[in-house]
Length: 319
Ligand code: XMP
Image (cartoon, rainbow, N blue to C red; front, side, top):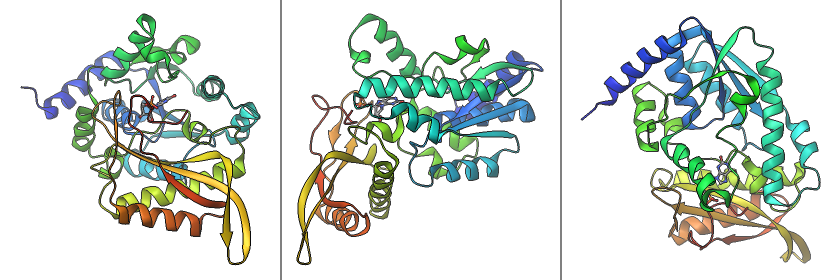
C-alpha cells in the first residue's frame, strides 16, 4: 500500500523533472485542490511558481482576505490578485438563466486569467488541481447527459487558449487523498477541510439576476450559516452547507409594521461523491439559531426556509 509521505516525495520529484527550469502559473480558488497543487509546486520549484487569484466578486464574505492570508503564511512566492468584481458584475447584468451565468463567468474568468498570466514573463506551464473524478466527469460529458446537466468550467479551456503545457499533479487522486496530502504538506486544517465551493461562486446561489446588493445580503446570510454549523461542531461531518437568496419577496411583521422582504433558503447536505446527496438532518436547535440570527442580523431578510430535498432529483446547488 502506498503511503502519502512517499506519494508527496515522488510527486515533488516528478514535478522537478517535468518542469526543469521553467516557470509555472497556478490559479488559486481558495479551495483545497488548488491549494494542494500550489503547495506541491512550491516544494518542487519554489520562487518559480506564480499564483493568480481572480476575485470575481462572487466569493463568500472575507474570502479574498482569507486566501491571501493563508497563502502568504505558507508560501513566499509570487501572488497576483486580480480585482475583477466590476467586470464580472457587468457581464452578468440582467442574466437569469443558470447556464448562461456559468458561460459568462467561465468566459470572464479566462479573460482575466489570461490578461494577468501574460504579464508574467517566461511562463511555460499551467498547473491545475484536476482530480480523478473531474477527469471521469469531463469524459462523461462527451458520452452522456450526466455531466452536461450543469456546465463545469474547471476542466479545460485555459491551457489551449494560453499555449502553456499542463501540469496536473492531483490527476490520480480522490478528494480524501488530496486532503491527506494537504495535511502532509503542512496546510492548515481549516483549509484542508473546507467544503467545496462552485467555480461560479455565489452567482448560482443568488437566484435570478445578480446585483451587488443582493450578493451582499447573501454573503451575510451565508456567513451566519457557516458560523453556526461550525459552532455546532458539524462542519467536518457535513459535506456542504450554504445559503441561497431566493428571487421572491415575502410578507412579514416587525413591531407594528408590515415588511415585504427577501427569503433565504439554507441548504446542508451529506454525500460521499457529490453525485447523490442526502439533506442533512440538522438538529432543530441549530436550525432555530441560524434562522433567528439571519432574520435579526441580515438586513432585508424576513424569512428562512430549510431545503429538505435530496439529490436526485434535486441537485445540491439551486441553479
Ligand atoms: P450539483 O449542484 O450538480 O453539484 O448537485 C455537485 C457539486 O458540484 C458543485 N458545482 C459546481 N462546481 N462549477 C463548479 O466548480 C460549477 O458550475 C458547479 N455547479 C455545481 C456543487 O457545489 C457540488 O459540490
